[in-house]
Length: 484
Ligand code: ADP
Image 1 (spheres, rainbow, N blue to C red):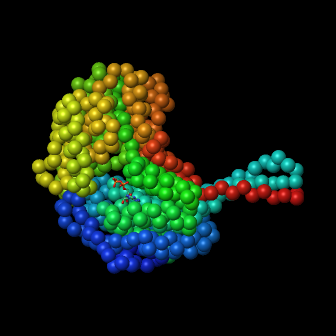
Image 2: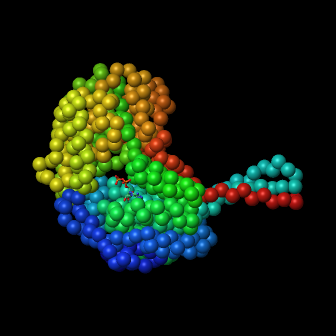
Image 3: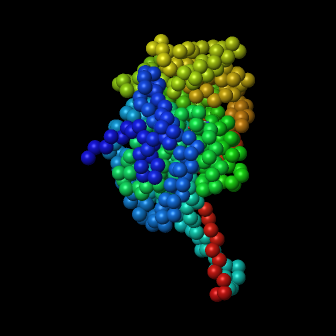
């Protein structure tokens, strides 16, 4: 049987529905500017209905055996792999990332369904040695309840599975609002979940345009039937959601903005460092929260590194529609993003940075920006202090290891960091000193389903993935038996 994964309806309580107002909004393909389709523009009333459905579904879903949930998760995973091509094409059409990258995201994203489906059978508790003869104590873990989720456009598939996969496997039910730019990937996952046998109300996806994002987010945070909030997106919105969740004391997970340092020490293997930067900086056209944002290069290798990177950018990066073969640089998500990136480049140049490659809107027009290399960047420039979220490598020169660590840690962000060295002692020292939740040592791609992902400082709260990921959706209970 073949499913049509693209739908123009939202998914609530096992039904494919329109907004109660009847309103819809158009989703654009960022590569062509053409309308890809329309989805419901839902509001606060619609999300309230979805929360009620999720709350009702939780009453029975929480009592299912981990093994039963595991079987459904495995079917969901298998279906995701079977529909890899369709899911990847939809993803490229709505997000713009090149097809090969989109397929990579589908594999990564599907992996969370498999992983959490397996892990939920191992949510062990503890038997605690009693301090009193007459008592026995044990600790069990139980699902927390309805989880409200808000996901971003830069990983339209994997951010849904990393959150909803964990919650559903843990025995929670979900109300999720995908980013307005990329609702189709989330809805396609609902089609597959339905086919896998997930009961009605366990996964609900509510779509809306940007205008209703605030009211929907507020409802998720303030509604007493919701027990948990999980958000990936900007630091500003994360802080707002955290404060909105205070009144009902919700458990909150946040994956927020980064300002990743990428440090190249004199002893680094030059080619490995260049390849690492290409992978980590130009993936998704620089639009990930773990992309290198500040490239710090030691003075002894600086000139060689800038030269080799310029050649690599010119020879290996090809900008265009992500559906075309050979393209590895797609468009930015929308025109606002292009203006922001161009503004940062112009500001850096005005402050003394040199454009070595790129530095302007791509000749093909639209939302495309040239892969850019800026040298002679200094730490006071906006391009270093703000999250670029675009294909711009800004290179800063440093002298000593201590100076590099000082610059790297001198930020309120603490998500990803990277460094390249062939000195083993330096590798240990620097990994321990970096104040980041993720550290890549001679490696530009660090996340894996099996490991943990989360930021320090203002980059977030909690962590996703790995053996710790289910805990975000579980609460511990101390059970004490007396009179023994
Ligand atoms: P970006 O700048 O990458 O779009 P945002 O934090 O603005 O980052 O967006 C991440 C997600 O949060 C998107 O789904 C967006 O629609 C949503 N969002 C934006 N503003 C709010 C808000 N006030 N409340 C809840 N969600 C919001």
